[in-house]
Amino acid sequence: MNVENWRRPDDMARIATEAQANAYIDEQVAALREQVGDKKVLLALSGGVDSSVVAALLIKAVGQQLVCVHVNHGLLRKGEPEQVIEVFRNQMNANLIYVDATDRFLDKLAGVTDPEEKRHIIGGEFIDVFAEEARKLDGIGFLAQGTIWPDILESEAGIKAHHNAGGLPEDIASRFELVEPVRILFKDEVRVVGKALGLPDSMVYRQPFPGPGLGVRCPGAITRDRLEAVRESDAILREEFAKNGLEGKVWQYFTVVPDFKSTGIKNGKRTFDWPCIIRAINTTDVVEVTVEHLEPAFIDHLVKRITTEVAGINRVLFDYTPKPPATVEYE
Ligand code: XMP
Image (cartoon, rainbow, N blue to C red; front, side):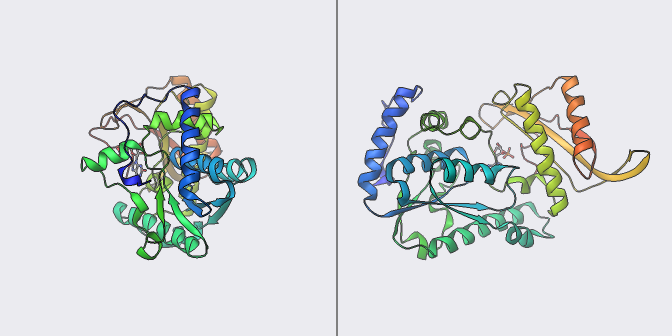
């Protein structure tokens, strides 16, 4: 199969039911087995919706011939690497290589304040780590990717570069043929297929999360303590949204810890700590974004938890800015 020419048929029905998802899964499993044969398939598994669904499809099709590499760049949300290991290695018995590259990424990022340079370092380092793992493996014939149909349409329209083989060095990229089993699906269809494959809701219905991770929510030079304040406040926010029935209803919600301090008071003593900014937004197209207005009692509860439980935070601010003029992320 030449995947480059593999297009969504104009009359293809939107996959919305479990039966439709199962039919798609059966078709793909058969096609993947035929395409892959007895070779191995390599996949960078971030734990995001698309790569997780690709992993689950390939596990069903070729089992241990799939080699997943999960790179922890130290900028993931609390509990994410653990969930990837639990779901894929423990529950689905996947062949999973876990690389904790936290120190490597954070050392390279130390002192770097420019947002574009930060993104460049994170992206470049990710490719280096993944390529190093790939070079250690024998018998890999294929590289699997979670390309979806909007990626193809956007790249054809010249809006966004299609991140195929994502800038891998030539000695690696030339060794593999691409496998893109969700290439013709829209995002909502990928979720239905993921659900039918038995992936947990927390993986299938998760909110968007940028590739550079918490790095763009720790504006300016990333330090380990401020990054930890972002991670802990984000975990509290997600826990509270889930408890209060807001998970899946609000499109995206997260915290940002900017690089300045202000005076506060705790247990009768002066503090000099960071603020934590909460951003909760809704959108249909990501081009325009509106702010979710939270209940005052819920806001009070969030402020109390974050200021008492997160080290280094003495103030909570709310970002009530739509897009435009602001973007969703701070960097
Ligand atoms: P902005 O900040 O551009 O964000 O208004 C729009 C949406 O895109 C997500 N985002 C990213 N996703 N890599 C990604 O995969 C990135 O570098 C990136 N930057 C922003 C952001 O979280 C929001 O949902």
